[in-house]
Length: 210
Picture 1 (tube, one colour):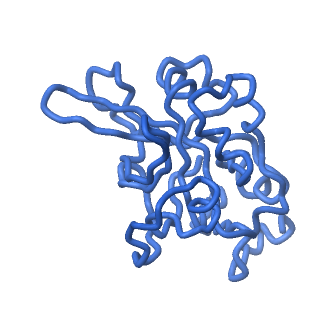
Picture 2: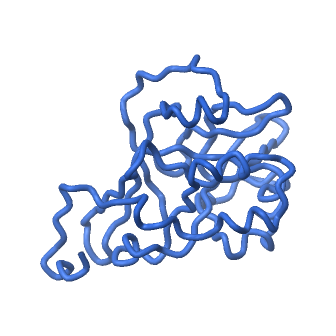
Picture 3: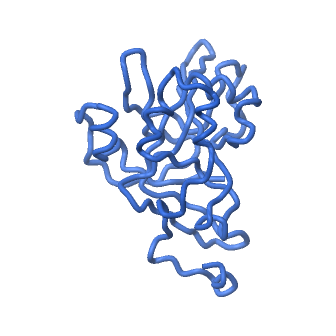
């Protein structure tokens, strides 16, 4: 489960602006911050007029829900996303990208945090979003898709975010992408695109893992 990651606010990557054609008119001077469930997080999503960068609550509230979930829905397993009522409609109609500069997992049984970094500009996590209202307020929220761990991630945790490659992001955001096409993205990213931070020092009992 990924429940904390680092973001710099709106994406600075040339890919986001040049390939997706998003204007460079947002605030790029924010320091890196760690985001956690229910925080507002930057996302890229499709609108009726194209693509936009905005901020959504991390922790999906399905539109049909009568009340806010007691526990935030921050992660959605890619293996069941088509079948679960909480996610199936958003998977087909309301997908987004959640840019990040790092994400974190903790070694089981310890307080040791492991930081995972991209080997390129940024991570682009595959996400979904929805809009919920109780009549007095409207909340737009998002959820991160997860998949089985790759070779870098597996010694720490058996799950990881679905990380999209640049050439996949446009297809992920297209409203007319088929479910068959979308399934192609729901797999672990190649280990060459992720690394562990240089300052990581595993506990003695875990040294053999790395």
